[in-house]
Amino acid sequence: MKKTDNRNINIALLGAGTVGGGVYRLIKENREEFKDRTGAVINVKKVLVRDMSKDRTGFDKAVLTDDFNEIISDKDIEIVVELMGGLHPALEYVTESLKAGKQVVTANKDLIAEHGELIGNLAEQMGSDLLFEAAVAGAIPIIRPLKQSMAGNNISEIMGIVNGTTNYILTKMSETGMSYSDALAKATELGYAEADPTADVEGYDAGRKVAIMATIAFHSRVVFNQVYTEGITKITADDIRYAKEFGYVIKLVGVAKQTENGIEAKVHPMLIPEDHPLAGVRDSYNAVFVHGDAMEDITFMGRGAGMMPTASAVMGDVIDVCRDLVYDSCGRVGCNCYKKMPVKRIEDSESKFFLRIIAEDRPGVLANIASVLGNNDVSIAQVVQKSRKSGTAELVIITDTVLEKNINDALAVFKGMSVVKDIPGVIRVY
Ligand code: NAP
Ligand code: HSE
Image (tube, rainbow, N blue to C red; front, side, top):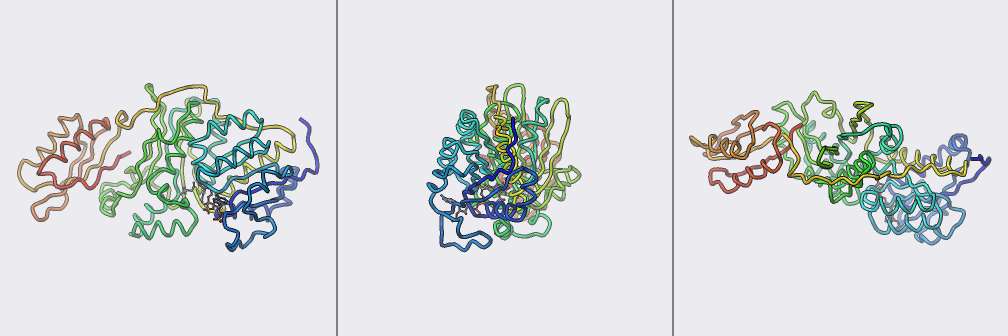
């Protein structure tokens, strides 16, 4: 490998939104520093947008284009940085860029979680870099550590908070009593939410991140539709209040676990004990806990979303690619999926549960409910009768660890019982 001095590296940004704006600003403000760090002057030659008429404060008008052909046909553009989001045309643009011999950096978890194999193989064939640190947990370095620093371990579990929008919403609802819709509007204004925030609040964004981390950590391909996802849209102020009374906070948690009979990959709200480190991860912060056989436990924590935190992760990748180009090398470490493990169905995994049940307030009802749980092998750890009004009582039950299938069977029986009026809360417990 021979270093080329005084290199000029032209890059193109696909997207000038929250993240694109942050990356453009970092490059503009740190040109000299980045030159010293990489040995190359990094020049943003083109920025692709959809709508040329929008105000683009901070951008040099001359670099803006709405025509991808100007980028793909420009031999002087060596790195394409995809910051548009969504599957199409991101997939086509990334594929064409790799085929044209360009290096690619992307922050797009949808793309990696669904088409990682396709574009990863293409990058490998072309001997190009394909880096995506910003696709998982914003500013937190987790892809590179999983691929490189922890490569000497057998990783058995990854767990954490990997969506900034929902963590912000739950924090505001819990700490300030802000409404769900106001908190979501604020998270969108702060640039945390996806273009369609359904992806955040329904757990799809976190599910994509779990798929990506599981694939890399367990060396076995996990795609998004194999990840169980449940979002925060059903969490109410009552759930948050009851959780507090029991000494818990509610967080949207992602889990990827390697078990004897397959991989568990899931995202769902969870009651976390107030003294657990995850309980203190607030606002747009994310945290990822990784367990490996040699290293034991490692925790990563930092801003999980937002303009400059995400630009930080993208820029780390761009700088890495520039260093490779300066040495005329390829630093890519592929996903290394040399195993083929099944992904378990949610019914076959285990959890503790918090149940809120509204039932008729008369003798024998609690015994009935307890016997349904018992008949389905669900053992009760705690039970409290909360409010009593107009002939109904609210029961709050916390179970021991049970098979998900068993709790589902018990819930199906409750739904057919006339004494059970409503089951407004079913949340997993740490
Ligand atoms: P954004 O603010 O919605 O910006 C998207 C940009 O892409 C806009 O400039 C848009 O152009 C452009 N664009 C979209 N579709 C296009 C098309 N078909 N052709 C040309 N340009 C197109 O999104 P963002 O928040 O920056 O997110 C970008 C990516 O980063 C997504 O993959 C997201 O998941 C990921 N990410 C975001 C964050 C975050 O905190 N925001 C964190 C980590 C990762 P117009 O401006 O003309 O509409
Ligand atoms: N919408 C995502 C989030 C952006 O809120 O975490 C970071 O991936």
